[in-house]
Length: 182
Image 1 (cartoon, rainbow, N blue to C red):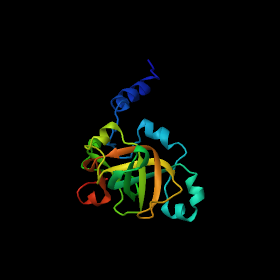
Image 2 (image 1 turned 90 degrees about the vertical axis):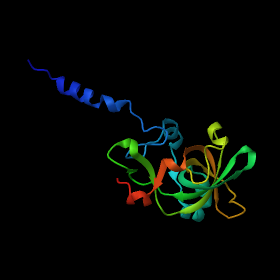
Image 3 (image 1 turned 180 degrees about the horizontal axis):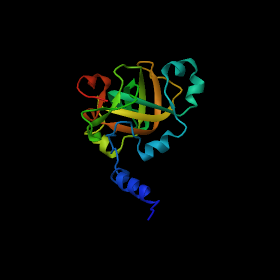
């Protein structure tokens, strides 16, 4: 008796354990995995390009931008926002992992700083208690550039509409290639 549906059933059963799996809040997967709210916030966003933002400031202020950065400093900003000084980094094409299991993978960014940027973010409850977003954390910020640059260092200022945070132990730079693998 022929069962044309049997291969489909076998495929469904084989992939069932992976259907509900999630990379979790810190993205434990081989490839970067945005959260649902992050995907929504990313709609229409472009990657921040510091050279083009300086060359065509009026055009770049009109765009929604996204950027990854390592927090260098955290200070009180205006209007109840927090001012994060970021070392802008490139997201790696693949995350580094300790072994073949995805739960050992960490979000991976480049070693080199591409620019400095200030991000004005509205901190969430967990981040405002002090145990959260601190120097050496990684953030992905989505927002728009402000007209004025930072008065102290002249770097661009991004007003955030969304951010995602990784504590220092939950991400790596590409330097970790010496003890992690792709």
